[in-house]
Length: 449
Image (cartoon, rainbow, N blue to C red; front, side, top):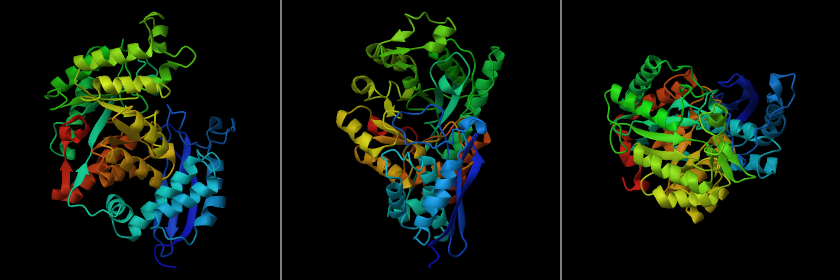
């Protein structure tokens, strides 16, 4: 066997950032090169996501063990891939898809398949003596680049929804340092704004405890209050808030979590429970949600809104994209679940102008790349994203650079599993030198910027 051929595949349990098990996988090539991948896990998940296989044994990790997925790697996937050339990524991913034989990877588990898919790519990159981003670009995509685009970070600084035990129904409020000149400077701006926000919250006697993704989780009245505090923080840190300069704001309200499919309305349950809103005022129709977003983007420098409507509300998305899609990035996450087949529908309907990319929503590197390329080829943006249950694995940093997505969503300026991705991007930018380009506000070409 040549040095690129797979000699051994071994999966095992590790812990994610919430202390729950997830799948890790070591792939060893014939000359002894070994690479490891760890798979993340989401808290708010779309209905169309590939299946994350859990054991369901309540006396072990509250049913969240992944020993079945690990057994599937070691007993089913590994024998099928031993001896295969690790450089043939699409072939390896296709073998695993066929072994599974379901539309949503329910038999073997997307967590099992993805762990192998990523570890194989990492091993091949090592054997090729290339960093992962360069290997993906040059060997998998067959693209030679003079320049690599460094992504603009989306910093989740206020957490709500399923990510925090507070009164905010919307899930994520984010800083985007679009006015930076480099990724390194973007991290500096983000850090300074984050710590300015912490000081403001503390001064105003708000809780500065943090949610799953490292953002603050204060008991605020509503989105307006959260956004006003963010504007104060940007100013306190010495920057200007704006969609074309300084620091822009991005949102992921994760509105699918608010959707009542029976009444086809959006119910702000946290605000209603806290008696911030009455049940009547806290219940929105799809049309009212669209109007709400229209008003909010006029009031605040919001450049991007993800999951602004429920994953079943295609008509609402189409209407919102018509209304504000020329000036605001409308991102589909739960709507598409990184699935190229569903993305095709969204492109045809003109439901959004952007897609969020999460590796574990689809389960292989090949399908992830296909979704990104499909979006880009249709003039859409693609944002590579972490999950709320993360690990120290930094694959998404390399993926964002390799595919030139120009944006990455990987949490706040706290929690080491989030910071690991920023530190990896800083390393990549340093390594690339003049070949690294940070486009800032020019990233949003789909908005004419």
